Length: 233
Image (cartoon, rainbow, N blue to C red; front, side, top):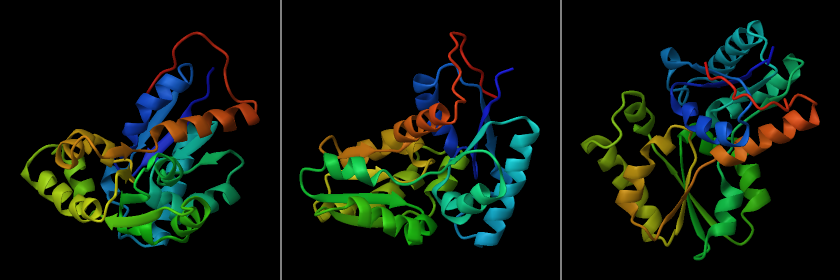
């Protein structure tokens, strides 16, 4: 039996990772948990998010998950260290793709679109200290975008107005790369690209997370060498 990798988020956002997972880890079984009943996690107390993360991890373990991916920046900040201390299996968390954005920027200015909770966390500030170098990082909380994605409104008047409001000040300050720092935001990528234009590069974390999962699986001896395609549940 191929034990699955468990992936969870506060709703549908983490599904944006599955394309990269399937491309990089085609033989791995994936078990996705969309915690839509408690979405969004942003704005909730750390204790409440950790309680949900523990309950979902128990659900994953009951289905023999060999690893859990916390596919949410907010939940990673609130709960991933507690999970690592509490369970005997590897966890991979999320962080905005600052490192590749810094490497890509030509103007030396990068904008980060994320939830307020993700931007306020110590983990994010450590990430900036580690990777920003001489590049200026401008952060922009984006309340309302997660809710648009959850209800399937990916191109309507409300998400377009929100995207225009949040991206305009970043571009006005010279940002030529925007980091989609929430797993929900890649679902809005076509809309964001339309609003900001072709000169702005958009970067999300799907590929980097899938590569990190691959490295951890190899390190732990958990990577199957099989030809048959994995399943998604």
